[in-house]
Length: 483
Image (cartoon, rainbow, N blue to C red):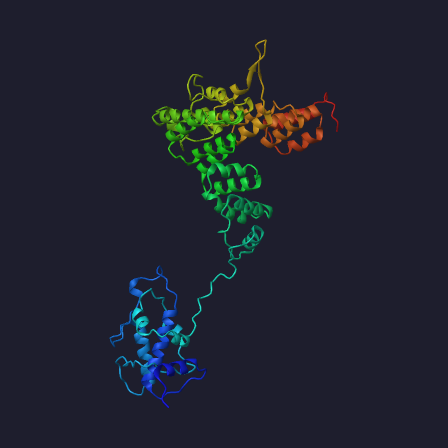
């Protein structure tokens, strides 16, 4: 009995058994249908590929693009002949083989665009035939741990462990603050820094207000901005938080980035009006005054023709040097100038409130370097109310002797200042160290130490004045020696 065509379709499509066919063309056609349905099941993404990446197939009988090529290659591998043209398609649906060994994933590597296989859809309208197409699963996401609905605790835990996490959930201000508080609770700087990126879209006033209640997060954020070189943002943040002194100091530190001395001087002048503390305000004022004075001295000394500049040429510029270096420079090149000049040592000492001890140490080093022993003496000469001159030192004469010896002072100069040391032990050790023979001999004489005089005599040259002096003391019967 012959069944009608619709009944045949219904019978074969509903049967769980598959028919076998020896017809190569029908088998090729069934694989073509299978490929077509698989392509139609692929999800389409308009934004990923360009128009050039889409291969179209027309129903004219000629292969166009990768799909027709794939079908033709499949057919040619099965057929015994070498026919290269697209197979003639019969209008009667044929039965496909069960358990096809061809993988669509090896045929279709790229995504397609909507409408690319419209001719296939129009040619085959039989919906029941879709059951023959293999199921293509969407690729799994590479990040298995990405969960968009995580609590702040779980998100922070994932961030600490280096696992994938999502911050998309934390949209509201309250959610952002909860995440930040949780990051602060674990005291993890990296987690706190990562949490800060959520706050970049928040109005600055709201952000700064919330920071006032979170001191740990605030200090970490300020440190992060400093490390990143965001000085202006740090200044704005500290100003909004009411920390005006810290803001002023951060603004003042920007002078380090200014290379031109004139521009740096003008910048320091603008800093004078900032709300510094009393001590910091004095420091900034001194810095500005010092740089202004250094610029004047530098411009003048570049053109100077004084003898000292020829004998001792300058080795470096005085600009941006510390105050003590500036004082040493002034004592070296401008010693003795009147107090009314900017380069005068006395003017610098008075302007910058340099202590007497610091001034003596600096001036002594500069004048001893020049072997100006008269100026060295003038540093320590003082007059009492009766008009008598006496040497006095705020730093101790043992230190004066050390500085003079380092600058190769003659023995007569060293002996004069060693003799001014009050402590007998220090005086004796200094005299022995710097070979001040007269002081050593007189000290042993005052101590009535005959044995030490004999030992010291052996260290001297015979017939030298010092040797003869010791010999006379040893022969003096009026001295009552201890040993």
